Length: 281
Ligand SMILES: NC(=O)c1ccc[n+]([C@@H]2O[C@H](COP(=O)([O-])OP(=O)(O)OC[C@H]3O[C@@H](n4cnc5c(N)ncnc54)[C@H](O)[C@@H]3O)[C@@H](O)[C@H]2O)c1
Image 1 (cartoon, rainbow, N blue to C red):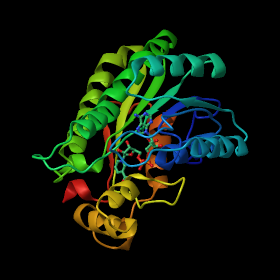
Image 2 (tube, protein in one colour):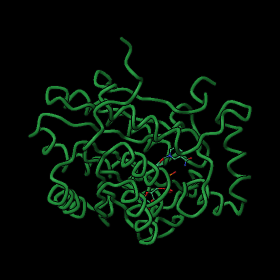
Image 3 (cartoon, rainbow, N blue to C red):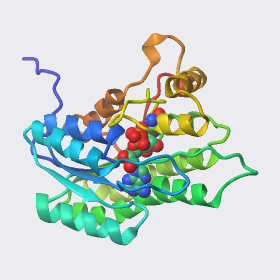
């Protein structure tokens, strides 16, 4: 007898997603809800000085609406992943309201464009503190809960830029290499507690409108470029040529759904490049 190729074990799971106000995080929230999960959606929903715009409270309300439209619960947590006490309070609130956290997706992230000689302290700190230290604070407060239950799944969002270097993005690239270091170390440290830890490295994602992926849109504004023009430029540098190799948010969401499912129960400490060929170049 053959079994249908479906993702197993996602029903009724509780998923905490950082950076869920818009973009890939919001897409993950909607898709995990459609798979039967309840969602704790965390986002800063406030500007970070000298960086492009972040999600707004209206974006977060939209995420909640989309999860609820899928028939699932969504708890909205306004918190900055750079702030350990805010992270601790948000995690406690998620557990109190939803009963537990089964899956943690460390997705909140920021990029900035700075040459080495003109590196700004404000952007260097914001990028490292959000992309590298943020997942560490999240894990510090979620992991003891998962260890206590002897089960859990953590997905860290790195980037396809770890397949090579990138001019003007050295702080961002370094932070995303660091995320791979966290992933491998946590997989080792948490193996005996039955917790899977993996990373996903997204290709450059086509910029979305409004609630969609805002990273390329934000960097394009900094360069005074049209977002699609900037996307085409990075797409050409990174992804394989040809129309097939244009990554959308759902490509990354599909990788997260797989890694969070029981289908991937023997997969831990891995880095899944959803990179449209970038690492092979
Ligand atoms: N867009 C791309 O091309 C691309 C490519 C590779 C990797 N990534 C990574 O994917 C992840 C999602 O990016 P996206 O494309 O959805 O961009 P996005 O800017 O649309 O989403 C990032 C979200 O993180 C939130 N956020 C930022 N700083 C925060 C903080 N300190 N605390 C809490 N929330 C914070 C923002 O408000 C926003 O909602 C990021 O980690 C990014 O580095 C993106």
